View 1 (spheres, helix red, strand yellow):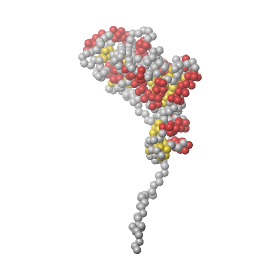
View 2 (cartoon, helix red, strand yellow):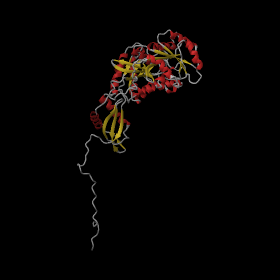
View 3 (cartoon, helix red, strand yellow):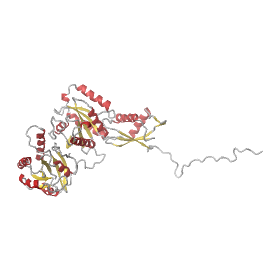
View 4 (cartoon, one colour):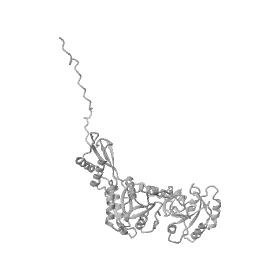
Length: 482
């Protein structure tokens, strides 16, 4: 049986660096700026054969008001309560600070066992801080270097008593688990919540989960890391991903915001369904369309979620404007669901997850080859392909090569030259005929004959030879002798 470990400490002591080291991936954003991590993040970690769940937390601070720092501290407290053991990190190079002493006294009164870890002990620069750490009253400090991976053997010995007595297999995350292509209903649905800053993405996540799992507030740009949360909706496993807000590229001037946007882009690439959250009072803006196009280019299913619907004045006009702009600016994707609701009150939010499950089924849909080619024959009969360089473009055969998103191979007489307008005509026909709304459709041209067509072959044992040209009579054309 696995156990849970929480990494805690004041800001900028290397908690996220240690988190990335133990889980073997660069999931948490790391920067020299203090207070980068705000929400708690979980991951499957291991040291040799010791497997456990690791929680990265925000830096501990002494704020007692309703500020953002106080809310971050509350998230860290919940992580300690959920953990079996806490790793209290200090910066050995900076030595023991008054804030370290304050929180060590608080941890000694807490029921969760605590292991004192002195980070940044590579070389001899941290020896002074390592000796000072004994004054915290949390036992012998463990010297480690999260950046260089030193001292993990001592951490292994310290955590071993909290593991089960029976050896357990390493737990795999959803990204590491191998799934069959047709086993999509059994695997967790990867659902990313994206949008501009301060549109209510984190509020939606908390409302869906029924708890304050991620930080929210009036401040724009609170979320920095993409937080992945395992969840179940009506017996359907879902991996819910809350992401940082995405502003226009020209406005992203700080390095930290650039890292957050990069993390959001990765979340979109690994998602299956993406919910794009809009502010109902502002409508569908240019940046929203840029994000929507990015989602479609990555081949993900798209849903438009209109938040703050309770404070939107002219609801009919707002909805009409959103739908009209989707039709004019994104004609390549038709039938994208638009779900209005209020994340603050929860009214209308119950319609979001059913819409997600519906488009996810479409995204995984497969169409029989026979049905596709009967449809193709009807489409080419009613509207034949145009002439290309004086020659007719022949469409011979079509099949679906894969789903996720639906991708089709179209065998033709030529591999290029078919106008984009005709491809849009075929794409629209596929949507209408087979119910492929709200998902991107990809059509790839290939040259080759229809493999199901009857080939005219010579009888067995005989080969087809070219007919020989008639030999010219050597006497033909010569004049007769006198």
